[in-house]
Length: 531
Image 1: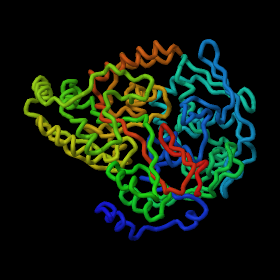
Image 2 (image 1 turned 90 degrees about the vertical axis):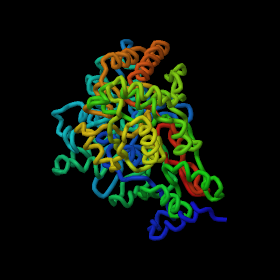
Image 3 (image 1 turned 30 degrees about the vertical axis):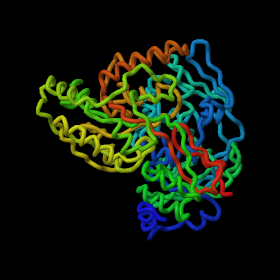
Image 4 (image 1 turned 90 degrees about the horizontal axis):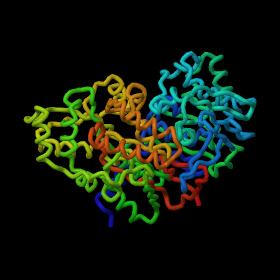
């Protein structure tokens, strides 16, 4: 018997277009959005990261998806000086860049590519620094421009990173999906041709797939990279079918028009589990959904107002209505899976009496009006942001706060964030590595306000000092103490209100094997194939 939800999904397939060649020789992945670029350096969009980092590029180091340990990738060995200021990396030999109709590499990967990749971001006078806007959100929000003193070539396959201060999380940063390595030779050719922006929009990397074509809001086509150093992909081509609506993605999956589906909504899981032709993958997620309050705009610059908003929100209700059984309540930005998580933080329960009292103390006894920016697409940390916002609106109304929900696509939201023209933002974060610094520095450091992901625009020198002190030593006990203090401080100040940690879910046709759901976001298709 067909359920109402399944009947609705089947109706939605009308007008869906197939990629017939891909269905025979490769896989079709139903993705939730269009990338803003094909270079993760220049965008903090999760969709951009998913569409570029794993298929097209490699990093110097890699995170093992099972153990979370750092492993060799483009770098095979590394040495750290006794003072923690110099990292010497030996690079893998024989790694080839993509051969395409627009670029034929004359050499294999070497130290020049690493030096170029970092010089572009570090040197404001570099000819590529201002290409594609000259903004490097991940790099700046982590303070890498202040941390890295110099990147130099010691030999064809040896590169040296010199730091201004020790940093225990530096190797983990080199393994981030944002830390991809570009081709210096391709960059030079595009510069000489007067088309440097093509470096970011018509990409060349060393990854398992090469870029073939992109039709905005329709699809991206990738081809297998022959001779890939990590072993040839088992499929000839990979197609990202861009389908923003979760219901339509599932409809395409049910009819076989897609082989793999990203980010199913929690409400769809019962249908998926009951269908023998579908396979559901679930993994613990290093992520957090949060409500960011613009602390540089009244009344959100008043900590009592922020505490009142947090006291009014019913987290358990959100988990039941939005996440179903795929989320955990967030008492901290760090999920319990993180080694830096503070288990002594109090569990937050709705307390309307306290919320009203705090508003009274802030001189807002009669309440106030505010807006929240919401991206309508499902994300791995929040399967339904609009419904989440609606539930928060209902909660805040009980204490006199009128919340207006403003739905916009990410490019529009990003423009308002840059100008500081917003009250609050419903968003989230997916960690790039296992180090707690990846959550805290990206989202709340002073350096991330103007040049990163600090959407609360909160800047605390004391908080920054806790982070800086934590990464200057490899001693785990000292780092843990600082991260515990940092979480206690955030629990009091609440520039971001943590909401939930979501399990990562992905659905595929049951005959698809070899998919790897990465612990920090994205999917590896290297070994994916059809049985």
